[in-house]
Image 1 (cartoon, helix red, strand yellow):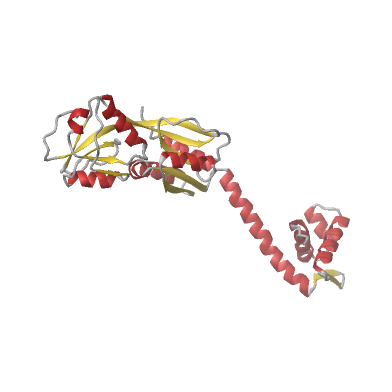
Image 2 (cartoon, helix red, strand yellow):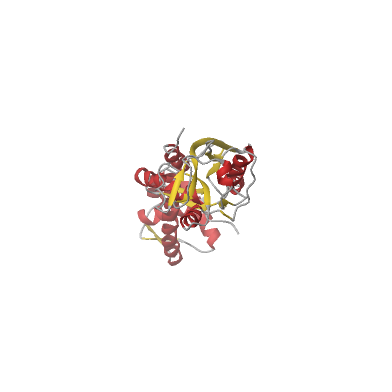
Length: 294
């Protein structure tokens, strides 16, 4: 089935509004034979006359009136669609899909989203709670636009991964325990532990920290939800190793934080598809970059 051209519909509307082929041709900057051809093509496609001439004026037929009404709506919708897309091209609005871990979403993203709201309130950020591996996979297949991932990561074809920030990993210990001022692998390995599950980069990072000192402790429980881990620490269930972002509220008084010896850092990177970056995505990258730390 042949489609109806919007240009032909625009010609029909112009003739209806001006009552003349010649006036419509001037308004549309078309040659009169072109206007006649447009109407002939429309009538051939519809299979019925769309216009009639009465007392020297061109008027739509009954079928023509119905098509003109529908055509106005179609053209208005088309113009609105183009305007909406142009606003996205200009970065004035749009949707950006972002993946990150629960901890990053809870403690780092709120500042970025608030800054984005003030600068570009029509940009909608859709969040997905994902591991770093899942985030990179979804960036590669085009179902995410931005990812916040643990570093280091192996290179991924088609993706740009840039170092973003680092935050110290701290020991979170029940306040009623006798705890040294700086926590060592030997001391912590002797305590009941609550650690991140083995699918996370943080789990591998902390395992390496213990292993360097010759320790391989088995945790009481493994989770991938930092707030739940802190709640268990507060209940005295065990100690934990977690990153501490500078903007994160201090844990409740039943928990104390202690620096590690040797120090340990959780490093994060910003990942996105290489090449052309849409403006809405660039606005999100800009507010995230403002949160970087050395």
